[in-house]
Image 1 (cartoon, chains in turn yellow, green):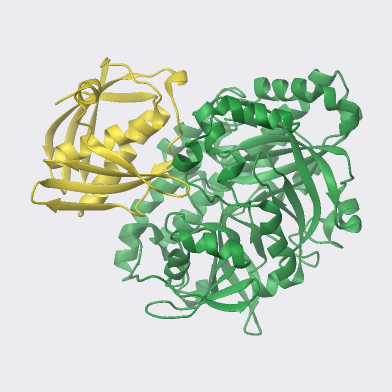
Image 2: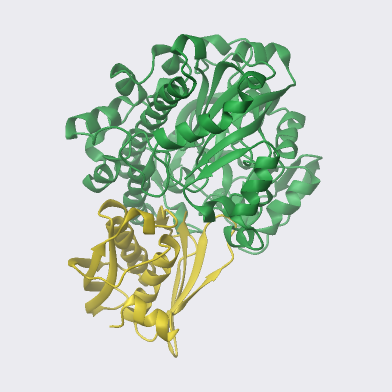
Length: 147
Length: 482
């Protein structure tokens, strides 16, 4: 998996921001479901951080099972938000043991960030506006972060 | 749902006729200009979506500051009847449970301290932690202390010296919502809250030093302790990470509960469960606990602000006489008695970005305000001003005793940032006599006055529609932002 910085340097960040009156709305794409999850994570960090470091000193396991891909994506983002807000942990590397529209098993690596590197507080990823669809070229999703 | 058509009822009321799966019509309070802004985003469709909730009575309502939210519009009000399959929806409360505002008066005259405003703001910025993930206002809460905060709210911190009994008397619900159960609040939520009590947070939260610059109703202003030229303090914050996590946790349960009860939802963020179901009761118990945390949070901040001002001005508590006018919550669901079709019914009133606006004859209103009605606090943007209004009888018949909670955003954060330079904006505000200190320059531009609707126009609708009466206008002179 490519890490955050490498993606940024290659200019292949698979997300873009869309208009929303009060919050942050984002469109993410990925050739695989795992890439979609990674794109959504990077979009979250783009909102939450003004700068990130390329460090991976610690690891966490994330395990999700849900009926719908939308629920998987919401839960994935909820896990990352919890790690970020409660443990001050930012992920820089993603390793997916399993990632499909119903189940995710991932080992994520990252570091404890410095408070001054944060930008916006992200309260949550909402069910409102959450769309996940499989297309010919891969996966596409829309998500709204409540700020 | 297709684009929703509006029917004009009068100059300040617009109706969304019942159609499709709507169980009641929608009603939006706005003048001709504000309604255009409300129509420009998805708020109207969201009012219609809320009208589909099981057990909703009367109307699905939106206040003049309404804008696109998630599930509910921001500025949305909906009352459901628990005795008729009425539901509780966490989306109708929001992530920041019991986000609210408290207004304090001081014995200070602006003319006497205008040269000290910079010092006052610098002191507040130093003494009250603000910004993303801010923490450390008071020692980390032990498990036992956390439990007490969640059960008892503001009274718990007042007992520890952070304030006085009058503060509690002037707080909605006396700063404690009944039915809170700390045991249904997840460990995750508790861990997010243990270091954040007494902190402001970021985004649109603020601490503002203001001056009363216009009195529109002298009698009510007197009852609220407001006089022209007086320095005021206002705090806008909520339940911080603890509340966000309570909401997040509940949504997973509520999505499953809605499916189990066969509730057809136009938007999954409206996921809900009958008030009387286990899922409904659990959410309400966790929500009440988070609401209590929020009241304790604002109470601690008020205490820190008192100490800060005393230190900055070298004045005693008696000389400063910082009193709480009122503390209102604007993200909450509460059980209240309302008259519907001639019958008194106990309803579950959701207010998502809306403030309770009860008249004086309600027992929920503090003794001191029984003649004049509850103070309704409507903060505007940091460059314009805020209004103190009063609840009315009309609000009881029109809006389940509710009014708006602010000016309401009109520009997205992205478009607010475009063409705005934080340093230039801060200079411009300073030239207008408003000294701003903020952790984030980005926040300053996102919260620029141009991002919000005109607070005078928004509150004029409340006044004309009779759902609140304008009492006094407060002009900002110093602002702390996260």
